[in-house]
Amino acid sequence: MATRSLFLLPGDGIGPEAMAEVRKIIAHMNDKEAAGFSTDEGLVGGCAYDAHGQAISDADMDKAMAADAVLFGAVGGPKWDAVPYEVRPEAGLLRLRKDMELFANLRPAICYPALANSSSLKQDVIEGLDILIVRELTGGVYFGEPKEIIDLGNGQKRGIDTQVYDTYEIDRISAVAFELARTRRNEVCSMEKRNVMKSGVLWNEVVTATHKERFSDVKLSHMLADAGGMQLVRWPKQFDVIVTDNLFGDMLSDIAAMLTGSLGMLPSASLGAPDAKTGKRKALYEPVHGSAPDIAGQGIANPIAMIASFAMCLRYSFNMVAEADRLEAAIAAVLDKGLRTGDIMSDGCQKITTAEMGDAILAAYAG
Image (cartoon, rainbow, N blue to C red; front, side):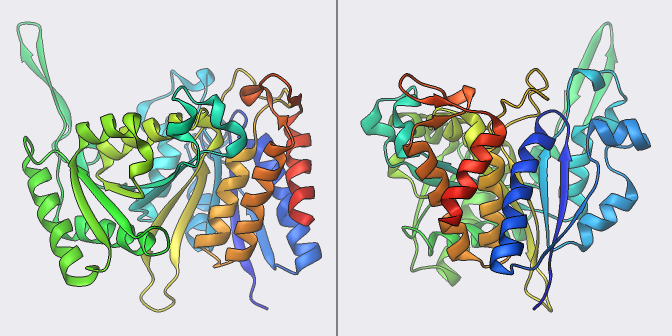
C-alpha cells in the first residue's frame, strides 16, 4: 500500500494544541484502518524565527514541497511584533503559499445545526447554510508590483499597491470553482468590481469564456463584490460556490465565516495546480482561526477547525471521501450532544477541554 505523507506545521499559540487532536485521529486511522499515513513535523512562524531566524527554514520548506499534503496550525503573537517585516511569523505562511504555488483557497462556511442559534443572524436565515468561497490566492493587489511607499516631500507620502491579473490566473481559479460546483449544487457566482476596476472587467470576461468553453452545464451568475457582501448578510443560502479574487476573497470569506457564529469553527484548503504526470495537487490545510496567544497552553482551545481541515485533506488530497464524510459527521454528532469548548459555549451545554473535544470527535468517528 502506498504511503500517504503528511507534513505537520503546528506553529504558534494554540496551533500545537489543536494539531495534537488531529494526531490522535491519524494514529487511529493508521492503527485501525491501515490508512498508511506517514508524518513529519517542522517549525513555522514565531517558533521558527526563534529557532532559525526565519519564519520557516529552507529544510522545512523542502519537506513541505515533498509531502502529499501540509497541515498548518497558526502563527504569530505579540512576542514577535517587533521582528523585521520580512521574517515576521506570517511570512512563513506566505512563503508556503508562494513556493508551493497554492493559487486556490477553499473556504467553506457551514452552519452546524446545533450552532444555528449562535449566529448574529436569524435562525431561519442561517440554518442549513453550506457555501464555499473559492479565493484566488497568489495574484491581485497583495502581490502586484509596484508595491511601495514613496516620499513626496513636504511631509507627504504616497502608498502604492497594484491590482494585477492575467488571463491564465482567472481561468484556472474559475475552473476550480466550476469543478467543485459539479460536486455540490452546480452553481457558481463570480464576484468582482467591473464597474470601477479594469481587472474586474477582465475577470468577468475570462470567467464567462471559461464557463462557455468547458463548464456550460454549471449555472453561472455574476455579482459586484460589494453587493455580494450585502447579499451574504441578507440571504446567504442563495449561494453555492462563490469565486473571487484575492482581496475580495479575503473579505468575503471572513464575512461568510462569521455568519456561522464562530470564526474559530471553520477549516480551509489551499491547492495548487495538478501535476502533469501524477495529477496530484500540492496542498495546505489550515483552520481559519488565529494563534490566540491569550489562551494558549490552557487546554481550552477549540480544535474543531483543525480537525475539519484534516477532513478537507482527506477529501481533496487523498480522495478518502467516505472517511472525510464520517469525520465531518462526527463533529456534528458531538455538537448535537451539547459538548462545547468555551468559545461556543451556550446555556444547557457541557463545557469541555481541547483534549476532551478531540477525544469525543474521535470516539464518534470510530463508532
